[in-house]
Amino acid sequence: MASTSDDRAVRPEHLHCLADAERAATAVLPAAVRDFLAGGSGAEVTLDANRTALDRVFVVPRVLRDVSACTTGTTLLGRPVRLPLALAPVAYQRLVHPEGELAAARAAREAGVPFTASTLSSVPVERLTALGGALWFQLYWLREAGRSLDLVRRAEDAGAEAIMLTVDVPWMARRLRDVRNRFALPGRVRAAHLAQGPSAAHRTPSGPGHASALAAHTAAVFSPALTWSSVEALRERTRLPLVLKGILAAEDAVRAAACGVDAVVVSNHGGRQLDGAVPSVDALPEVVAAVAGRCEVLLDSGIRSGTDVLRALALGASGVLVGRPALWGLAVGGEGGVRRVLDLLADEFRDALGLAGCVNAAAARELRMVRHDG
Image 1 (cartoon, rainbow, N blue to C red):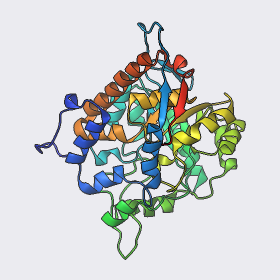
Image 2 (image 1 turned 180 degrees about the vertical axis):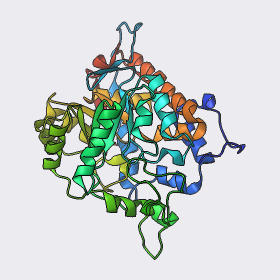
Image 3 (image 1 turned 180 degrees about the horizontal axis):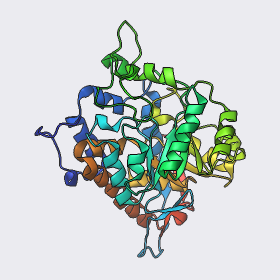
Image 4 (image 1 turned 90 degrees about the vertical axis):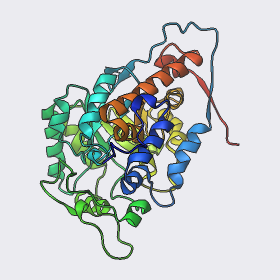
């Protein structure tokens, strides 16, 4: 849990960019929790490459356009949003703040963007939808397929507006920071949709080379047998918009569209799964071209500014997912901290739109981009 009495704490209103939020969260989070949020898999090559790749994408701005009525609103999955973004699914948010997902979901509601509740949320979906904002439910396919479909039904009954199936986690990759920290969940934090009491995620690993407790838990409950037939079964089961998160190959995006999904999320799981996987933004243009408008395309992994949102739109995305930055805000100031992060992204995105000569998100998709590989 984030410290509230430490003189290192920074008030949300003193954050002026997302890097400020990261530094402030780093100062107040316990080291093992900080590593759990920040870390990637393996040598963290893909984790670092996500940011490097985004910084190599440059916008060619247009001029002499009337941007006096510049607006950031658009639609995602057919619903209006105030920004072309949603909060990404992040597990166990009560690790960083006592209210966890409740605070983050309230901030998303006030900002007019969807909040995505994880299967591994530390707050049940019913409490989150009761807040009244737009909520998407992220699904990990479980070893008991019936339990997966039961979770979908539960999310539907609670009022979720979309189902997001994560497709790149047959098991949790080796995240060396967690292994070295012998990371396990404290007793007060649990997966509200899975466990009634303590699970393997709460048992400190022992023995040389042992995986983290969270990896042991997910290995026990996640199915490595998730296939396209599972996607088809899910598509038949739910009438809600269906999103596949974790697509990098154009061929997989084409097949997803053929299965009737409503959107794909181009994502390498924030560098937390296959280390050495292509940066998400590098995979984005090929995926956009391959689906050719048959479904929406969102970008995830490494978004750290409103300029990054502009880059994603110019490369053909409908919007982006934002993960770690929301948790930085949550650690710093609960709901107010998450709201500050979203306000910063809104201000930066509107600034980037106008300075690029775009009156809205649709105009941003007409911009030309230059990739600098020097």
